[in-house]
Image 1 (spheres, rainbow, N blue to C red):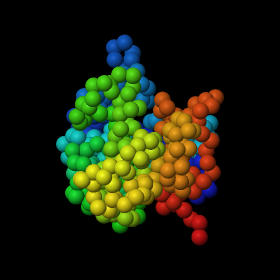
Image 2: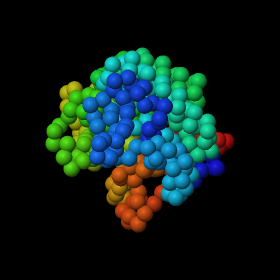
Image 3: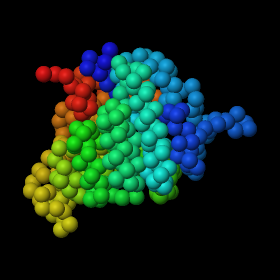
Image 4: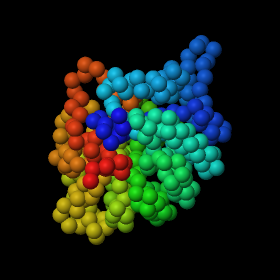
Amino acid sequence: MSIATARIIDIHAHVRLAATNGAAGPHGPEFGTDEKGVVWYRVGNYRINGVKHLNSPMTDVNLRLKRMEESHIDFQVLSPSPLTYFHFIDAPSAISFCRAHNDACAELVREHPGKIGGLASLPMQSPEAAAEELHRAVAELGLWGAAVGSDFPLALDDPRFDRLYETCVKLNVPLCIHPAPAGIDGPPGDPNLKRFDLDVIAGFAAQETIALATLIFGGVMERHPKLDVWISHGGGTIMFLTGRLAQSAMLRPWAPGFLKHDGAFEEFLTRFWYDAHLNDPRALDLMIARVGNSKITYGTNFAGWDAPQPGQGHHHPVDPAWAGNARRLLRQDTTP
């Protein structure tokens, strides 16, 4: 099996690599067990208790491959864990972590080329360093693009990121965006999101929506017409809010001129790539109605709390077209 022949390709699959432990200096990451035998995982001041780190599909490739087979996943594209984006720490520590992650991810891909591909981690607090690390990760290590968070010290439409976007286009690779819980190494965010797991439900959806709106309203997609951006969870709430965002683009005085005609905002939405990890077929149907099916890919948040579970009836069947879409996004399509 390879990505060229895979029928189900999962491109929403995070990985934690042993080689990155301590790679961000005082920020970690690190794991251990407390005096009561409870396992923990630490990133900066953020600590998770009771979540298994060692001997899990997230860290053990053999367990990952076994779970993939059980889940009928033919091929998986690995991206850094959102807990280890490190977008708000000092740049040298972030660069150190990203290099360690990308080296280790590339090594894992070389060991299992028929089952696994990889995306690079980037130090987004330094746009120049991010562009340089993307070039190294793709040109030297053979990774297929990059996966980053949605919240950085700079906004996504800051002109200083243009070099990174230009590098994506020059290397012909996608930029994948997936949120992280607020407060790991940056601003704490809304305290109401700390209850009921809302930081990874409502918080993630808000970040994804803001990221897409920023890339459109801020002119990034206009300035870089060949840039391919993939975003998780169907773009958050963007499909539900399309009408309001389009109305604001046409009527509000701050909106750029290229969005003033009817249908302009909706047209930009079709430029993005999305995953189908929505946990509700009705939400997926709305996304397909808005942007079509040609840029939707399969994603599971593999081994995560919200991954598809056996016996659950509310997950949409995997569309056979999504594997081809993933190959096109990742530039692995060998069709003549």
